[in-house]
Each structure stands twice: as C-alpha cells, then as structure tokens.
Image (cartoon, rainbow, N blue to C red; front, side, top):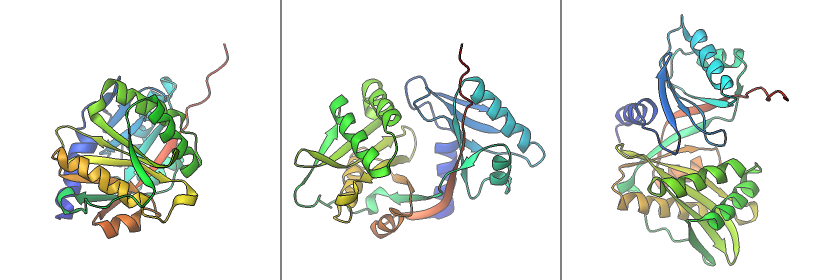
Length: 264
C-alpha cells in the first residue's frame, strides 16, 4: 500500500468531498471547513479543515456560532496532518473537550482474511429491523458503558430510508446478544467504514471481534469496495494490525457541547 496516496485519497474522498450520507444530512463547505449537519441524534461536526494561522481562530468561532445557533453539540475531528499544527490547542482554547485519540487504519479488502468463522456457539444475525437495532444498542451499552439511544435512532433511520448504506450484525450466544458491529458504505468512493465493533466483557478474547471484521470484509468484497477504514481504539489496534490493516494517522475528536435550551 502506498500510504501517502491512500491517505490523500481518504482526505479527498471522505473528508473533503463526501456527499450527504443519510436522511436530512447536509454537507456544507464554508469558512475553510467541510461540516456535516444532521439531526440532533445523528453525528454533527467538522469533517475537514484547511485553515490559515491568521484566520483559524475566527473560523473555529464561526463553527461554534453555527452549530450552537441550531442547538447542536458537535465534534471537530482532527488528524495529525491537519493545519495549522496547533489546531488542537486552538480548539481547547475555544472551549472544546478532547476525547480519546484513535488510529486511522486502512486495509485493502483483497488482502484481508475473509474466512474467519465465529467461535463455536456463536451465530451472526443480520440487523434489519427494530428488534435487531434493540439487540445492537444493548450490546453497545454493555460493551462501551455509554447510552446507545442516539446510535439506535441513527441506525434505524439508515435501515428505513437508505438500507443499502449500512450493513449491521449482532453476534448471538443462544438468545443473548454478545457483540455487534456495522459497516457503512460511501458510494462513489474507494472506502467503506467499519464502526461500532464491541463485545461484552465476559465474551472478549474468544475471536468474535475478528470474525465480525471478516464478515464485514466479505460484504465489502461482494460490493466491490477497495479499502476498509477503521478509527481504532488501543484495544482493537493490535488485532487490526495482525489482520493486515495499516495505521495512516491519529485522529482525535474535539467536542463542543451546546448550551442547554432555556426554559420557556
């Protein structure tokens, strides 16, 4: 893999020129940034920025004004190669809060192992309806310790209005959901994104996560996707490296919380 070329393609296709990818989603290019504006339960934030040192602070302030005027909290997703070099410090000074950094990892679909079966006693169940979404959010809340309500609403929106844009799966141990994950497709690009891979604590270390990577890679291969992309945590990064993913950059989300709405 030509790391520089793939990273440049990712920036160009996914961060700078992404088309609206969900119901009611707007992709706006203004003030030196590309931003995604959607419903409050969806992801809102800055996908890409090309800021000059002399105007960066005003551009940051403009994004804060825009999203808060809509009553939306939002995320500014930075990468290690973004400019200006002190962008993270500027975001912190503007009132953003940094969340844990992740590794931007990419693999060529044709070079990934596609034949990894789930461990004995585990079956993979496609998520296609509200019951499947409920199982998926149940796993998410247990695996990550966070509220899965917004994720569930976002996924149900996708399945209802744009089912070809996402494929989700839950790993079942009997009737109990123990792991889940999804793949999101970006038509017209070389990339599909792997998201939400999580396993409840007592089922970790048994190969379920690896089987969910292979399951989604098979779907990507069937659709002719060239590259899979993951924002990998410290826990998943070693597994992905062993499977053939390459680390291209570090990405850090900076979150700005909208002030609570005033009572009428």
